[in-house]
Image 1 (cartoon, rainbow, N blue to C red):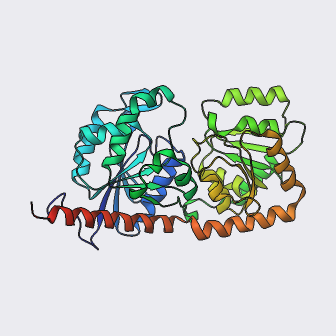
Image 2 (spheres, rainbow, N blue to C red):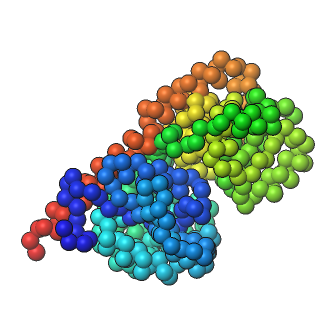
Image 3 (tube, rainbow, N blue to C red):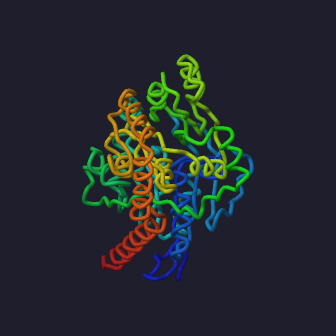
Length: 391
């Protein structure tokens, strides 16, 4: 088969993922989704390459868990939007060698790169989130965003909740599919007894857990206010731009029972997921489109508390079934939910068991990989049929 020609049905597929950050430089939620997707589709005969930007010096391609990571230099950033001139040439080259180009939105430079690199292969974009905060940028970016979304062959919404509530996705319903995120528990290292004992000694036997990057939309001020005048232990895993602000807020409130442990490796994170009593996930803005760490809590059979923000968080956590859902930015309601779980261990245990069952039914990496592989093959077949038409 000639290089760059479309793969026939049943043949190995070559997929190029393009996103601004990836392993080993960044360990956020979207990077975890791309990782799980690459691992899962590799088992189904897909060859995956991930192209991302990096500040690192050594940018040789990396073999990572069965797929290839290609990084190019990050030149500069505007409002967290990375730019790279080298990415344009590399995107064009790798796209020509691929059957599908899989974009991960939002990233305005990516939209521009799609056109400047003259990508002509079938394309799919996973719509991870609306752009919520950068109002000034949106005025300039809006025409490019619309042109980009019109140009791709398929758009994937990550939950029916987000599909229903996003004005942007509402304009493209005819080309949008719903494929939820999925996780593979076997890719998480099981904690050894020594590590479990260390954390049990450090944080106690009953505590609420938050895991995530410490950003403005995570609503951690809500969680801190919710546990003021209580003695519920809370462990906060993660680092980020508002870390010092949150620690200062906790100090003002005198929250000696709240422990900030910083960013942890997977083994320590899994130990805390195993030990925790429940997940506290107070994200209060639509920038939180899904909540991978919330899904991790469900995977480990933990009851959850989250806020109703019209996104995938409430697709993971069903109020009264797998946990409790409260209004956003409402510390009193969040505190009441914490008290309900804390004082009712049997209820918390039952909700945790149902959360694990819902994960197994809807949110496995195997299910996500199968759905994406089917979409890839559909788009490749459609592209092949279109190019085969005379004229």
